[in-house]
Length: 429
Image (tube, rainbow, N blue to C red; front, side, top):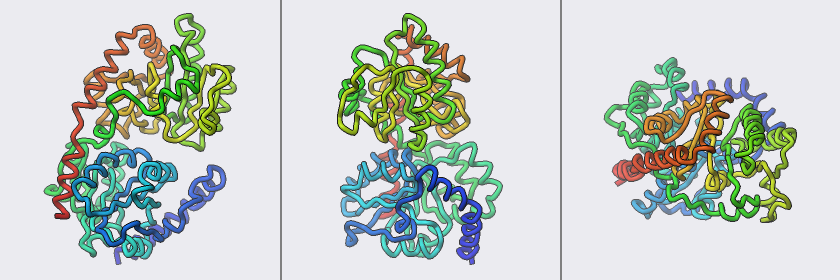
């Protein structure tokens, strides 16, 4: 009965959301691939082995699986690990990281018969859901098959939690079926318990992203990127994971800085979060009047820019860290607009002076520890972005102190992988 009602709710949602999906398929070229997999037609490379199914929604969650998968391969070498993702960019990242070793596929729709087909094809022995992704039919089928479900790197944002509380009576039975929750913080642990998780099955581990963050400062491919964009001794300011509206603000700030003599050598790299915005941002940069180049054109042929571009548009996937590695200063996007933020842990871990705006609810814990330890800088608006950027560029000792503190904080918070792997192993051995 519960599955029937859940399926009905899904159909109603599909009817309401269908036009949005169609628009995105046509205008943004999303959701065009993987429909067979979304309908449960998935397979494994080694069906005779026991199976660990890891689900990570998008790029951030996929990246967080890296040390976890390495740890599980060491602790459970006889198990096959398969990885699913929901978004096109998440799947692309998973394929880049794992496709040669592991089966990678789109997450099946949570309709009861589709999820049953997925279970029949995968025969999972344990299911690991990154951050939150608990689904009703998935949880029910797992319980029926006595397959443990674990939320790893668990997180419920400030924005999402009140919405879940309003429907707690509906979702509490689903959360109660979860075998184990490994949240990043005690605050997140309290939220999972409030939504129906058994308190005895909730163990705080910290965030896996601290463990995946690279802290040695040497980024593969960065040296070649510097050659391609003719960076030389110039200073690079990188805006990473930007959202709508931020690029225009940054271009205006950059234009103001470039009128001042101390910043004649300053260059700007803009790397939008979503690939469907690459052309839009290219038009904005073109209108700014600065010479610029699209990195995709250099990367395609491993070429070098004919002239020294003042602005570089990072219109490729998986190369943001290279830009961070070359940067004198980093601004993390989707934070000046209320979009929840992009990953500020990565540039901080690399020892870069890192800035972001006030809208960081998706990275609350990281932001809190960085700001508390003076390991990052928060700006409230365009004027503050100009002032603090100028201060960091004219006072390198100040910027270096922020960068060093940020890197130290990241290192101090590492260790979640070992705790998570030990807890997962205890469920299957």
